[in-house]
Length: 586
Image (cartoon, rainbow, N blue to C red; front, side, top):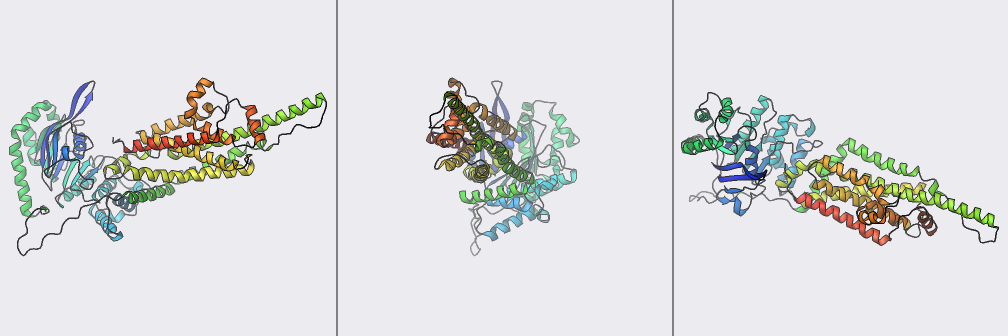
């Protein structure tokens, strides 16, 4: 049984405490199908989230089979299913793949046969078996709602919470979904609570909960609702609510609820006698002599870190390769950006003349020094510029890699986290996926550009240059991933990441030297400076001297640059971890 005792959920608004859920008390037995209805803003979804544990109750207590959830912790992820208003599936995946991924993330199955049987059973229960091979993006609204239900049923939850799963559907699809929820409540003693704004098909529910401004105005049989509110039709209930304050409706309900609860109990007993409701035997029930004990129900266990990690990584690559637009964009960036760099490579290949050791006239010596100076300016500025172009382009790639990686799927991630997904497994899968992109982009940039403009470094210079290209890409990818994890929307994350990349060039000091006071403050945060400085410091002495002749910005030692960029990577990953752990459910 699910029981609520004087449950409140309070927020602060304009400095005052406002109860969005106000002293709600309910008793909901096993195998019960209840609708939560009421005008917009009455607290329907807030109450559902409070029951789910997404909104911590401010006062009162919730009990599940006698266990105080307020003191002993929330329900186990396998005990509860939550179907939100939004789609919880990825468009490029098929129905079967979506259900399979949900099963692998939520249920530790014995073997592949057990996995397949669970998937097939859920698809049959929700009527999706015939369209299992269709991609999510081509499903109708009703089919997507069925898929959302299927992805929750994989763990056999005893409490199923549905938030506006019939909104926006045509009358036929709406009735089919309500009928499906009704049938699901009749299996294994499952409690199904459905928030709906619609007052159609109420006869399919066991009870109706009417909320008004966060308070209970009615909770009883559907066929008694019009009598209680003294109206001829259920459509008149909402206007009727507006005629009195929520306090008066709550007071009226407290006076009459026992008589309506007795009617609910009679209806339930009739249902049990007719065989319309089958409840599982209590675990502590005694077994008569000579009878076989019922098989023990195996507790659903959540898969471990590695199982969730491999499932998420496999799913991410599958989604990536099916998104042709994203694949084309990545290939275009991978091929075009290095070509763009080589357009500026001609001057970087020039030679710097040496001063003659032989004695010559003053005029000839001045001409020779002028020639050497011109060579230094041309080669030095070109080499420095090419390194900085590589650094900035890789920063752009990094932003494109990860700015939307978590924020773009925030709702799905939060839903899966509610279902038992480990944030550590989720973040590890993202890091592994992005690391592959970073490696491909950075190595291709370094090797391709080096063919047309060989890196003019001393022993180990090219390897160091590759290392710094990897670190600037990895550092900016990690930082943008952290931004993506902390932001609530993909638009916010993208905008902030673009600004971050945009400031890299002007604040790096590679083009124009910054005042020392400004540089001392900004330089620690500018990844581009450290990658550029580290690569420049590894140039062969003559070229390094030429670069120093055309820039006013001081260079840092190679080891210092490596330490700072490593710190940037660590900061980005820590921010991503904090964002992944934080509750950001809408």
